[in-house]
Length: 256
Image 1 (cartoon, rainbow, N blue to C red):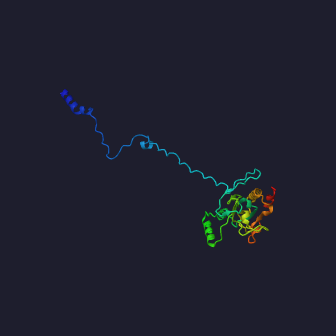
Image 2: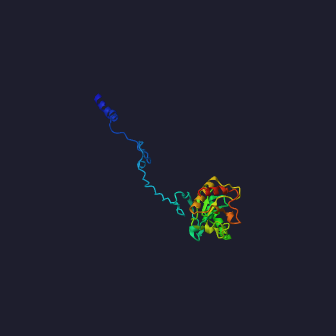
Image 3: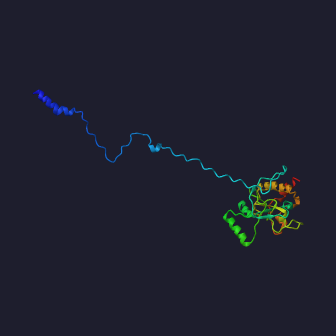
């Protein structure tokens, strides 16, 4: 009886428990993608960033305007450093450089370098400059210019070539020498309010101490022909009374 019971037990109990058939695995939940078990970056992160290519070539730097008057070739009388800002307001002298025998100094009656440049060049760059230009044209007050302008910081601006006639002295003439002083002179404007209170800067005096003797020597201008606007026109008061004219006259006589 044991043998049959043993076979029956093996068939009904032992055999199923020792069976090597695989157990059923749980089905994955639909709709969920298993995450990769890794810390490596994704393929998209490994894709190299495309090269931006060469940087654009910067535009060429525009050279400054050439001097309106050829620089001096006299090693004992070099041309001072200056910034060229060409004016539209000029015409020809009767005899070119041969006409030059005097220098006339002015104040601008304007404390601003920029505003003075706009007035003297006829090229407004600001809204106020545009309004002033329109006002001049409407009132017929006329355009003005000078050969040089001395800024508050001592910058020498060249506006009109020496050999050309600038419009700086109106209807004026040198004492004892009839004729339009604009035909024969070089005009130098100095940025200043002109009220006797606005001070002329040390930098402006130093610039004039270079420019005036240089021009006098280059064109053989007599010392007595260094004058102010008020010396050639009874209607004018420039340069103002707080301008140290004697200092410039001393510098002008130092080379003679």
